[in-house]
Image (tube, rainbow, N blue to C red; front, top):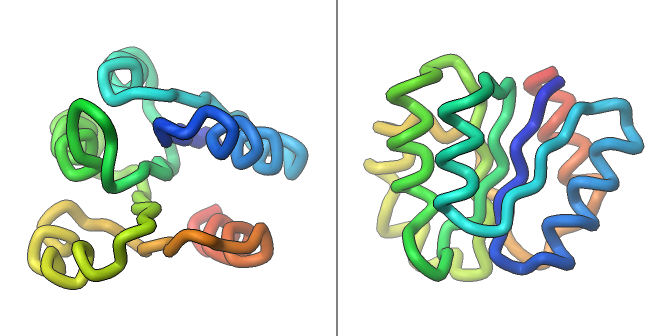
Length: 118
């Protein structure tokens, strides 16, 4: 599966990307929204794992851009602010977000979610 991982925490991004790559996935890490949007322009992804709160834009903005190019990609939002996500349930549905992964999360939970969409 081809996966884009986006979080502005570089360490988390690389740990998650390495974990998924070790499980046989083709993973492209991104550390900011502009880079992720460029990647979405260049390549189709099967799954996008994106942080909700980023420095220069939100995960929703990234997903809006992705949906213009690829309506079939699965999407998982990562958040350390579950209360913000609860207020955005309508938007999650509009952007066809498959799951919300709350920080801190386990690799078991990541694997469980990724396998659903594989």
